[in-house]
Length: 154
Image (cartoon, rainbow, N blue to C red):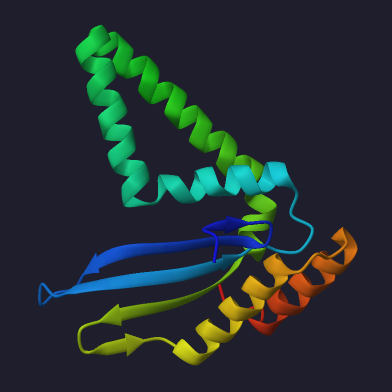
């Protein structure tokens, strides 16, 4: 399964629970059908800002800029990143409300979440991406998968 596709995004992140045991959190983010390429790109920026990768990436960039250009560079970089995030947030307001997700957490003591539903949806999304469908048919299948999750799956 690709990490990003027209239908949405897959996010797999390590998660440390209270007992210091390692676990993985896997989330399928499914955008509302009709989401265009610009909205998908902005939504991925918005999602990146909430991830460890995005936060660590920002800190590395600020560190490099701070070393090279001092505090002025850090301020300018921070303002630019904040403007990018605010623009992404504004540009995705419509689809963010409609984006649905399905999540499982894999821990040493078992799986939390509906693994069967997760596998079923993931298999359908894989088949959708593998099929050579006309755009209108792709969108129709995407909508069918999206509706399976129901409006309460935010």
